[in-house]
Amino acid sequence: MLEGALLLAALATGDPQAGEAIYPRCAACHALTYDRVGPRHCGLIGRPAGSVAGFEYSPAMKRSKLTWTRENLERFLADPVGTVPGTTMTYAGVPDAKERADLIAFLTNAKCK
Amino acid sequence: MSSFLSIPNPTAARRLFLGRSGLLLSGAAVALLAGRDVLAAKAGDSKAADAQILNTALGAELEAIAAYQVGAESGLLQKPVLALALQFQGHHREHADVLAKTVQKLGGKPVVAKSKYSFPVEGLKVQADVLRFAASLEQGAVSAYLGAVPLFANRDLSKAAASILGDEAMHWAVLRNALGENPVPSAFVS
Image (cartoon, rainbow over all chains, first blue to last red; front, side, top):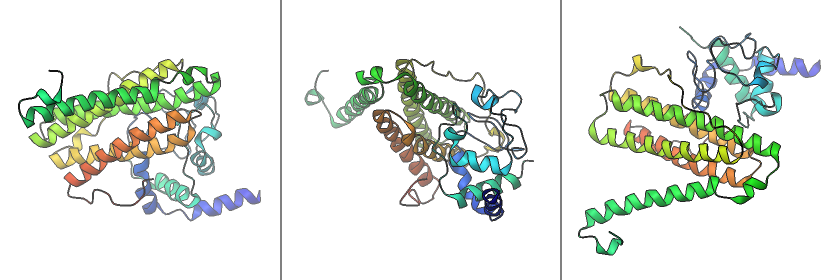
């Protein structure tokens, strides 16, 4: 419970502008408004994992039963392969907690229209 | 023509050298990624996991090939830049080829190119837009390979992925330079 509260507090410090500067790291596979090797990020927060219509997810992601709350996204970004074994997002993760918070703040506030 | 020494002029020599170098590099890349017998001896789980990492990279390489094709056919690239874009596309083709062969060697099924890709073509109005788009893909590719390197069970594959990372970082730097930006903005990539 304390851990959850600390995580929420850390996420609250996220800076969307700093996150925007980090987001280009995702650009090999993701875009905000359209699907690429990875699914689109617009509408991510609150979306059930594996649910973008027409996108071909890994079986692991489809059966993960995750919803992309900011907390779950934080865990996933820290260790994608460890959080959802079998994910096709074969990426070591974003090790810096502040950078994860910034990225999540950007994704939460991204302009999608 | 069997030797560089028998070539009549420096231009022809350079052309042949570059051509041969490409072949040699391709051969080395294949050796790095696909030519090691030790790969076949690795345990099944780690082979499957390594194949998945390579397949994700392959998907991104195939998309990059398609993106450069869009750029090349846009009519927005001037001649020297167009040649550069086609050269970079050729590198991505080489990466994709060797990645696909390695996935197969590891017992996996290589992903194939999508029949249709989404690209922000409506935002491509001038040459700089195309260069900026390509630079963003190359920057992302550098980060993606950087994130993949530590995940491989087989360290030969980490080395090979780092080799591709280096190539794509050079693409990114050249594209930034063409845009009039600092080609190497920091001491580290992330």
